[in-house]
Image (cartoon, rainbow over all chains, first blue to last red):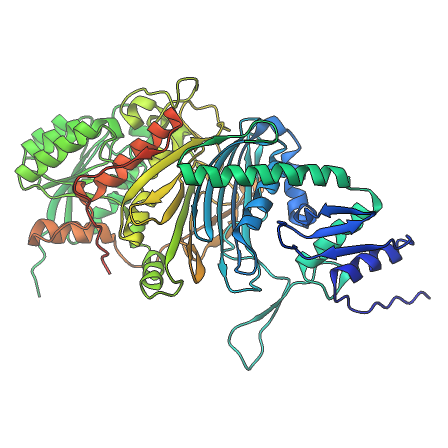
Length: 253
Length: 371
């Protein structure tokens, strides 16, 4: 009888190694740097390349949202997103992430942004090349370590999809402990069997890095998208400063 | 203890979505529901079986001829008709309880103010969302400094589109008052989702204690075939620097029925949620509070709704009574509501021009909390 027993995973890198091991793959030399200075997301160093990890694309519900958006891209009307995170994530990184999600789900590049920034809060209206609207409400003022509170809803001509069940005010956790010593529950978020021990977010980071290492996600595409997202971020800031809409042409603004 | 002196009241037109909510005035000891008029063509759709024993006329003229004893009216008609009904009611010295949109024609709006104030008419606007206690909890949290300085206040008010069973709501003329294209190259016209949802504008002002400074709006492609907008979003800054984002879309689908029965569709027919970002935290709220969910046999639909407290009364009409009988100041009258309506018109202008619109209110009115 087969016996499986895994130790708890404690780092994203160990998670990637675990996945490679389970799939009988060679473990290459790699490093994952958690959002280094000057970057807007974590960086995978592999084969001499610095590859931005757009790991949120592999979050289970986000993947479902993407699939929904790709059913009939020209029928996508709008993506409305709310995302609130702890102060440990800069607002710029959050804008970067949500713009990527918008393009990923709506299957079309953002061509116009009208943004309003106020400290660590940002509201943004945009249009994609396909004519869909994106609306973002973002904030990065919660306590460091708070479980991100997000809500994405795509509205299409054939229906809607959301990663936050309607009526749920805050992000769900998988397990809640109601102990007899504290009236407030303790929530647990475990995302993946092989990565037990990592949070949902870190499990997703590991799964995404694993996919890049295997070549299932093209590293050069990620590098190009990073460049595009930086241009979009520049457009967001320019729009907020000048109080007008900014049109994005090509990679530039 | 004060003696209850019921106000003799009539409901005009009865084809507004909230009209049915006032049929219960017949059971309210503070009111005597004398009569109703029914808008031509809407008699089968107004649920007048709930008005058994109450005279229902085919026109306001007939109603007024038969009931000179009236003291007040509920104007429950299409937006286009409000101005003429206000003029007639003022001429007769009747106090007015109005649906949430007095008019989108700002000249007409100012005429309504002039007419009612010069004649001492009580004019109250129905903005029922103000009575959701979640609004006041959020306000109390903000005022207590629980999230530090407010950076942004954001709300959505998603609903079904009622145009299938209430066609005036998808008619640009009936809803917006005239036929105006959303933008020069658009096939859509003003008068859809935005025109139906002023509450979020009111609550943004109420909670920030400020008014709108700049307004920008975008409309998305429709997912229904009506000629007014389904999806629209409004953003900008309040005068005090706080950002706002308001999404008053017809974002939730509905069963396309011609009578208002079993129209609700999963996941929810109306949603109102809010988030407030402060320098020291964030508030996330569902202004409809806790929801009730049920599964329906027909088609297996799953429905969720936010039921109100059992056994209580229409709080707006209690306020209206106090204003009419005892001269209390209305919580939201025409002047209080003007900046919200003017900002909604500006949002339409922004969609049309693609510009951020600067608002300039000569005498901003600070909204007062009723708590």
